[in-house]
Length: 295
Image (cartoon, rainbow, N blue to C red; front, side, top):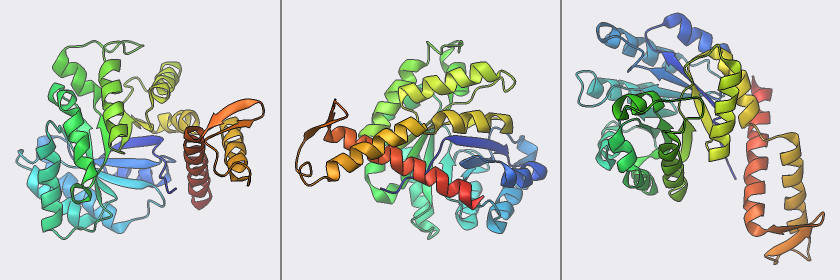
């Protein structure tokens, strides 16, 4: 089982060369080099050039590199997408995905540019229409030619468009988060939680990370490097979880248990669905260890 950790996904403004360089030293699992919200209209073209040059130059180690382009219908979108294809990041993040066609159109551009199949598409889920159509959008991921691998929650935009208030428990937005998670899992996609705006509120941030993990998120998008450490800590499997998972895997490998659907481990009933969960936990833990050794 090959899994890539996406515990911490840090937005970096594409117009800021110092930030792009600093990102090479930040222990985030993934970096979103942003050409959209973080960049003023008069800086869009310059930001595109800076981001694509940085990606081509490399130096980001094992971090997953994602370029967020402007929407195709904007004056910058088409050129952003073609430039991102040429830069060869790990993924391209499509903003304001409202319908399956938004991803399909982007995938056609990637194909037209002979972009390697390893380069995937991520989708921003940030409008009411995104949530209404989340099932159909996620279903696009079943076709390899569409390259969709990850959904990103845009909770700030969702709040703006819906007029919901994001309080400390996110009561108003939890249903949208849950709907997206279920759709993502139904079609084998990853899903990353939205940002926490007050980067100085460490306690509130940790609580929201815990909530996202409980809901089933794979990680969280971040707006400040100080959020990376706590986020990595919370979304990493604990030593106890890894130890228990290894015990389950070992038990099912015993000759007497290989063909069984249910066994007992340390007095607890364990099914094969628990074996699948255990294998994923161990795979994530090993991938995290590999990343840390490579830094």
